[in-house]
Amino acid sequence: MGSVEQSFRDIVWARRGVRGWAAWLALQPASALFGTAVAARNLGYRIGLLRAARASIPVVSVGNLSVGGTGKTPMTLWLARRLAEDGTRVGIVLRGYSGAAREVTIVSNGYGPHAPVEAVGDEAVMLAKCFTGAVVTARKRVDGVRAATQLGCQVVVLDDGFQHRALARDFDLVLVSGRGGGFLPAGPMREPSTALGRADAVAVVAKSGEELPAPPTDKPVFRVVFQARALVESDGGHWRVLPISALGGRRVAAVCGIADPTPFYTAIRQWDAELGEIFEYADHHPYTATDWQTIARGTRDVDMIVTTEKDLVKLERFPFAKGKLVALRIEPDIPDGDTLLRMVRDRAGLKGAP
Image 1 (spheres, helix red, strand yellow):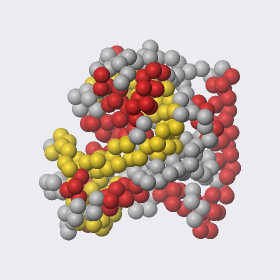
Image 2 (spheres, helix red, strand yellow):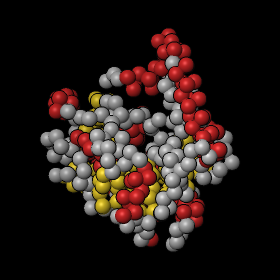
Image 3 (cartoon, rainbow, N blue to C red):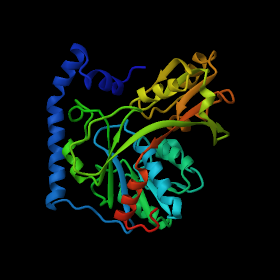
Image 4 (cartoon, rainbow, N blue to C red):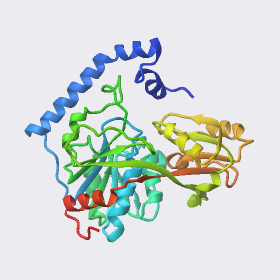
């Protein structure tokens, strides 16, 4: 399916063909203006004209330099779960992108979501279904951290917090991939690579077996590979985990609305599934009854419809045949994960480090 977002990713940012080059050149003034604004804002914080508020509990951020597609949300979930292993009360705070709520919203107090996707966004509901701690959305992250503190949280993890400089952090983990290019809107970058100087650690996101060059930073660098670990099925709104081996030899269709779907398709094929029809939508797509009908008609002859977890929170309300709609659960594989966790605990002043 075509969309403005996909056109930018596949044509403009890739400078594909005459149309791609022409659009890229036409957007250079806007990108220059964006880069100037970013530099001015960062300078304001560096010289003290702008100040970051300090929360009463430690704040850990997971972010990146570009828009979408580097695995911030699964990394946030991994980090929150690991920090909670010794009994530390951990909360997750995020903006609630694509949600309509403008006020602070308690998505979950540890017992599943009690806020709709339309209000808080798909990522917040997905996290609430997968995490046993508090999940809070807030346009101003400092307000979200305050709400998490009132819920008894002892530390919060920010999903996509690196550019949110109005809130001081105790630890900044920045994910980078092989993606490059210029500033928005002509390219995918929100900040230049020099911004890694503000990070406490950098995670290089690579494909399995891929060796990406180290980023230009003197900060500790970790390697991350996101792996498909399981399938998730919604049963009356309750999620249950299935073995991923169930994909083997099945005829499947893929449905997704994510920033970069290529790794998703690759993961399906790696489990020997026969991938046929693909229904590709823009990131955070709000599925409608018409979409469901289109998908249902196009998947009558397949064994399974495979989607992502953040798409499942929006698709599970439609009456797909029982057992046919499943989501691929993606988790990070971090060879030096324990070292990273110790760094976060030490910098945040948390006890009980492994």
